Image 1: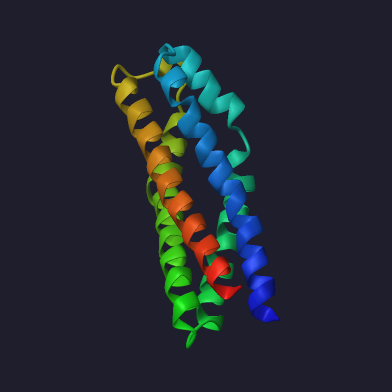
Image 2: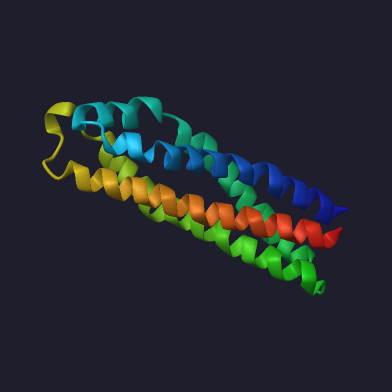
Length: 152
């Protein structure tokens, strides 16, 4: 029963960070075409509040997937994809906490007047980190679905 509850918690809580990361990937070509002030406005205004809301679900997914991994010990066909999922979701969270959040803090301090000359490098770094996070979350979700399929 606990395993079923944890699996559903994982499925539901992991889908929001996955969807948010997918949005960033889908926006990538268009955002790379924006000029500096407009790109900065999008970063500061459009994404305001995303980190806290999406981050909450990412942390819930992190704890739930590791709880599920512990709950499936001894059931190797289910345990293995669950652990791979946990590792992918954990890696995505690490990218977010260690790289995206500090970059967001830097971007939050900028204004159109103080936009540095090397802002395109920051933009590219931010977008690539979002793509990496998406790839990790997509892989994690895929392995979570594989574990669910094996459990049936």
